[in-house]
Length: 293
Length: 335
Image 1 (cartoon, rainbow over the protein chains, first blue to last red):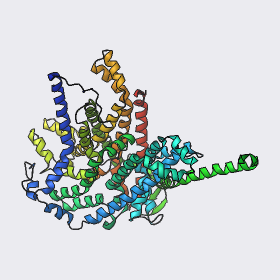
Image 2 (spheres, rainbow over the protein chains, first blue to last red; image 1 turned 30 degrees about the horizontal axis):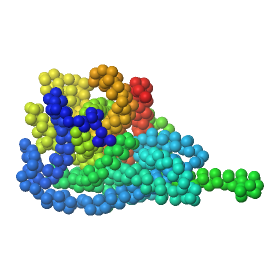
Image 3 (tube, each protein chain N blue to C red; image 1 turned 90 degrees about the vertical axis):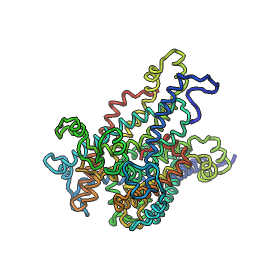
Image 4 (cartoon, chains in turn orange, yellow; image 1 turned 180 degrees about the horizontal axis):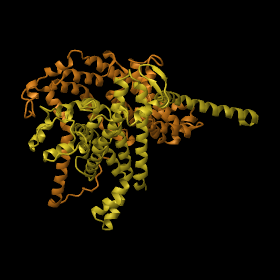
């Protein structure tokens, strides 16, 4: 998809000054845009390594005169922050959510694509309809549902994991992929005596691997970035995830921006690295489903 | 062969049994997803309306019918002013973000689509903000918007504009621009506050990559042959844009427009981190107001009022979406 271009450029052409002008302007525009997109990241990293005085200097210092790696240590060990704990929480919550969501959406996506049962059309339409139930409306009742009177999950990991073990977008995405598998494959497996579960496990899943990777990455990313729900459903610092921890840290850190930027970097860098490695899955997964966080 | 000796009655029974088993297995596959959606989406969705009809602070107090709605919609009450202010802020926020996001994303997607070298690399960079956590990215912007040492004040200083308070500035931008040119504007024409503009700048930065990727996918779906045919017929680039590209891209534009509008109306995290609704409530959108009502005032019927507010807000979102479908949907061209 990325390699094709609108203009065929296979044949070498003489230098065309009429084309270089617009092309230069085009690239200048794109580079300016890319700089705006990337600058905050650059500013975060450089600020995080500056000395306190240099970070607050006017005019701003674009490149640190000396690199203070100890800022990161100081931010990590800042009083009342439990970064290691928060990271363990987030990794635990995100992994469990990803595993669980993968399981529920593979099963449901497969059933909608490959199994015949009563009410399939109606059920699928109902599923679509639930997409229109907005978070604003459900967040207060969900909060009450978690309270001691009903589920008793307030201030637990369970409350941060179980409600996210299902995603309609993932079900749709996997259903699309399972629909794309050739019917003959399915018939052949059935003749050999394989049931649905057997077929799904040994033939279906390996064939839809790209979809599994996309769903896993997007689910993990969403869980990593989750903020509002953990903010209201937890109060003990020991079980809070990194996003909530970061807000607490920025509140306490005041205007010591070199430390705040180190804290932001803790949260951003892991996802940025994974994104740069697996960017195709992210971009194509989102282009396909149109998820907007 | 064996089937021939089995009486018809038994055959029907075994067929029924097979169908039953197949249905049973399918519902077993669906059960985890359906139970979770039911419990965490459908039940709270219905409960939201029920709760809006109660007085419910820390604990359930009593059934209250439409008292909460009356309290919010009564023009002489304090709740009414809050809610209308929040709605106004939300509308400004949508107007400040959605059109600009879409225009920039569209231009970037067009340029990238024209076989630009390094398209993949640009796409990766433009998409970077979208995958970063809103909370962490907003922390960076809080720093760049800092009134004393922020990078943005330095940048506007380069073009001769004085330092601004950005996120702490409650004054309306029209009023500020007016007073810079010596024209005093009345408060009713003050416009959105500079702090809301600052929040919008962050939002635009964060979501451009998402829209660019969707537009790029939409452009790539348009058949190349159409362009070639038009060129052979001697169509000029402007004509191609108006007669081919835009009509065929209109479903994508429509889709992005709706998603972006609803998304902007529902924004919470970035506003919470950057301003928490302040200064002087000039960035308090409806989701922030609901959050404040429900979370920080649980002692005074926060759950009942909050649920009623969210219900009204959801109705408004649905009305706006339907309006977009009626008015803009008609211009969408489906091939």
